[in-house]
Length: 318
Figure 1: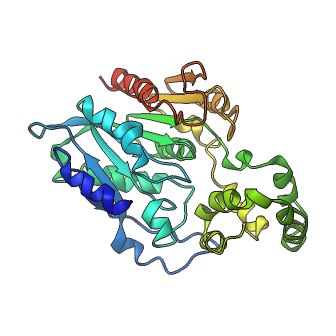
Figure 2: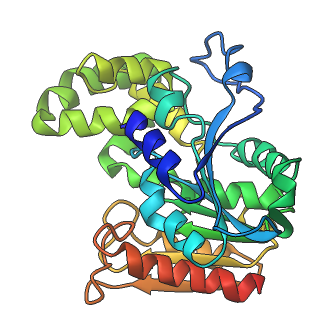
C-alpha cells in the first residue's frame, strides 16, 4: 500500500513531497524500548502543493486517528485543500502507519511535542517559501480530535484547529464495564479477572479489541500480532487515561471547529462536552444521517465533510 501511494504521489502535478521531520523521541512510557532510532527515522509526512509558481499559501496539517493509515487523508482533506489553492501536509505520527507497524513506536498523549517540530519544519527553508506562517491550520481526525486540541493548547503558531469529531477523553470510548473493572484494587486482581472472565467471552470481538489496543504500547502491539486481545488491562487503562484534553481545552486560543455526528457510536456526546470547555472563538457543527454523513468521521460523505471543514478554515484564515 505504501509503495503504491509513493508511486502515485510521483505522478501528481506537482509531485507529492515526501518529508522526514526531525522528532524528539518519547521516553516516558512503561513499555519504553530503545527508541534512539526515532531521531534518525523522523516523522514521515507528505506535502501536497497546488500547481503554479511557489508562493506563500495557507497550509493545513492533517492527522489521522488510531486505526487507519495516513493516506486516507488524501481523500479526507488533502486533495480538496489543494484544489482550493492550499498546501496540505499529511502527517504520520507516533502510533500511526509505518512508525507503528515497522518500528513499534506507540502513540503519545502530549501531541504538542509532535506538532511543534512539524510547524518548525514547515517554517524552515525551503518549505518556508511555500507556507504562510500566519495561516497554518491543524485538523485531527477520529482519535486525533483529542490530540489536535491538546496540541493547539500549547502551540501558538496554529491559527485554527478542527476536532473531527470533538472529544475529550479516549478512555470514555471504551465499554463502561471494562472501565469499572480496570478500577479494581490492584494489577493482579484486575488482570486475573480480565483474563479468566472477560477475554474468553469476547469471541469475534477479539480482533477489533486487539486492533484498538495495539497503538498504545509495544506489549499491546505484540499481543495483536500474536492474534490475541491485550492481556494487561491494568496497564492499558492507565495508558489510555492519559489521552485526554479536558484539562487543557480552555487554553486553546485559536478559532476552533468542533464536528459531531448524529449517529456517533464510538464517542457519543463528547463533541458537545468539548465545545462547552473551549474559551476561544468556536463553532459546533453536527453532520447528519440525512446528509449521508451521520456516522463516525463521515466515511460515506468525504466531499460534504471536506466542504464543511475547509469552508470554515477559509473563513477563519481569510
